[in-house]
Length: 152
Image 1 (tube, rainbow, N blue to C red):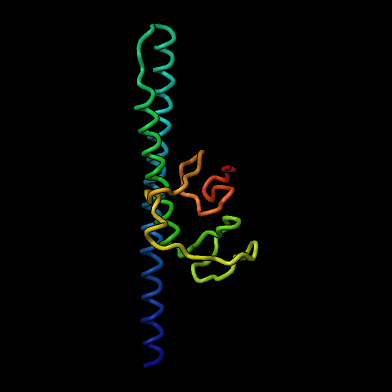
Image 2 (image 1 turned 180 degrees about the vertical axis):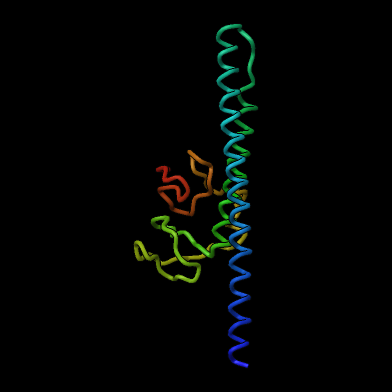
């Protein structure tokens, strides 16, 4: 029975890994689509600016900026889901990726504190977002864990 129990456990583990890989791939495809949407909006901003300059037409840049910010917020949410699927936590001190069970950062040695699930949501009131990519920042983070941008 021990051999069959081990085989069943290995099969279950393989199935879970396959499911996680498929879900992560799906989420990454979603991120790529949203990043493409952002590039399209940047193009529209350029066109609107050109028309405003040449023809004196009005352009509502705030609407474009709002769409970009919303897409970046969605991307940040998806990135958090990917980290959760991969069982990865970011070090609050250096933003290094660590195994979800780690108590200390493998990169800098700082104590890893796992945020409460509600606090990890990018829409949480008062949550800091990266000025470049709008990914959520961990408390006290100087650099964005997603894009590496220095945030003051």
